[in-house]
Image 1 (cartoon, helix red, strand yellow):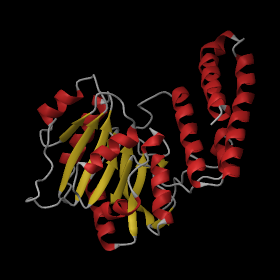
Image 2 (image 1 turned 90 degrees about the horizontal axis):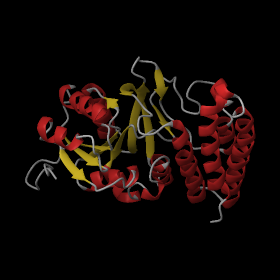
Image 3 (image 1 turned 120 degrees about the horizontal axis):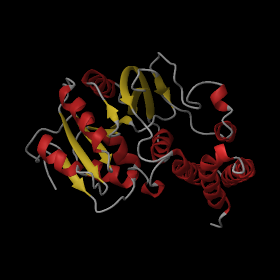
Image 4 (image 1 turned 90 degrees about the vertical axis):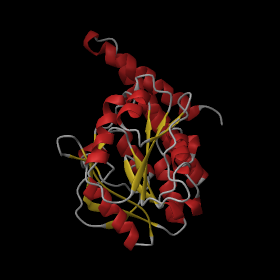
Length: 312
């Protein structure tokens, strides 16, 4: 383990940047290059928490980025727990949770630091997430509703606007519900008040849960249109495996933060829709051109049904 965070005698950084990686060296390397070569003026340090990579990420860090603090886990402990390890191992006034499949620019991060410096009510700030071609990916989200979950699960929401339900077209600084943790800057003092990420989520939903708790405690979350990050996205697992993990995060969020009735309705709705999809993909599996995809869809939706209807 490399241990390069400041000693008590050194100045506290403005920004501690925390990345979690698992066999993603081909994205982690350019991400770190963008951090160190992007003209970031704020004092910063970088911590990478590795969840058991076997692709040479550790050797690459030691050879090319000796200033990075590496925290090594024996296996995959989940995104939330690994992020918390990074937060606890750093001292910056602000923490940047950053996906390893991003490319950042210094002026955007400096703008986020300045905003938090001048807005003491802000617990967190984030900006635009862009695809590599510059098209919008996601900016910010409202906290979920049952209507919204139905539109997502049926994909009807995608007919309303791209990346539904995330906002992808906004040019105003505004207080919002929550911002994805692909590039999310957090005030350490706010985390000291409400606590860190809930690691029972493992992955998906933990950032919304944290920002919900921050809002409940009276803090604001701000979207900054002048800050941007390129995010490749979806590189850690395919969509069929991701579906169960996303739905698990939704169910946990509802159970923790909403009333029991809404939590039960969510499970019934997601499970019912998945049952209907099982019927559709069961028929599609009879057609040779659809058979390969149908098998993946059948397993994925069966996993969701089990998730939704298993006894607590």
